[in-house]
Length: 78
Image 1 (cartoon, rainbow, N blue to C red):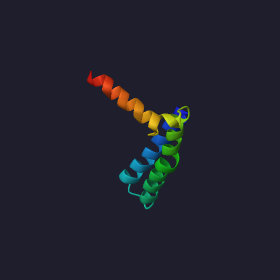
Image 2 (image 1 turned 90 degrees about the vertical axis):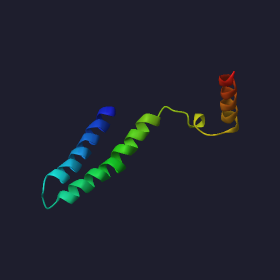
Image 3 (image 1 turned 120 degrees about the horizontal axis):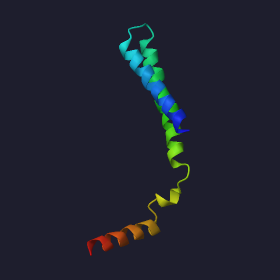
């Protein structure tokens, strides 16, 4: 999965650079497709890949997590 994401990332960046460096009549379309590829394909795939095995409750500010953070802060002070 990470190789697919990397290949799509390089292809999107290549499209953007191609649009900036090569003066063709479709240069703006290359830039647009590169940016759209990054934000509509690469970023969601990357986010899914990084978060697929995580528990969302560990990252929410619930009462239990706030109590854990306060307890850790107290331990660090002493």
